[in-house]
Amino acid sequence: MSLDLENIEIKPMSTYKEISGYQSLVFSLDQFKAFLSKAKPSIEQLSRTSKDFYNHMRSLEEDTHDRFRHIVEEYNQVNEKVTALQKSFASSSDFLNTLNEQLATVRKENEEVKRQVKEKSEGMMDNTPVLKIKSTLKTMKEEIRGMDLEIGILEHSLLHRNRLSC
Image 1 (cartoon, one colour):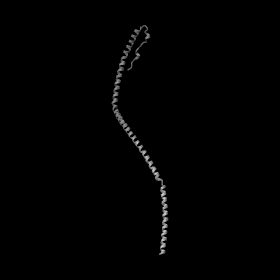
Image 2: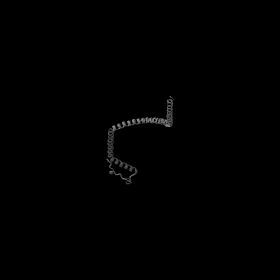
Image 3: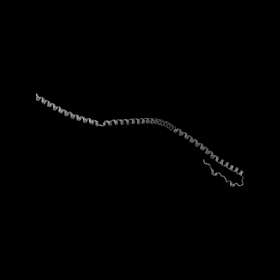
Image 4: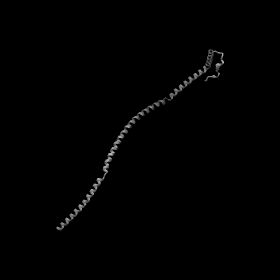
């Protein structure tokens, strides 16, 4: 519904030179009233159309709201779960930080123990004293063989003299 502005004639004031200022104002008001009386049905129709459109849009909004209500509820439930998971994550992160601190402490202690074991094992791996002991044992064995040989020779000599003297 559109206004039919083409049929309305508004004459410029310059054509009414003989009309005084007050009469000109009255004449303009009369023209405006005539314009409003012609436009009133169009305005009323536009008003009715606007109200109908508003009511239609309102019903569409309500229908849409009803159709998507379950999605909104599901969204709210998921949002609550996300909030709970975020709290759980924060708690787990705090626990993980505590465990990482404990792990760092244990690693430091482990490194200290490794260092001590290494120092002790280096002292144990030094085989110089063992080599000296082996060398000394070898020398002693050689001396014992030599003495055993001398003892054997002396025994043989004694036996031989005892046989000769008998």
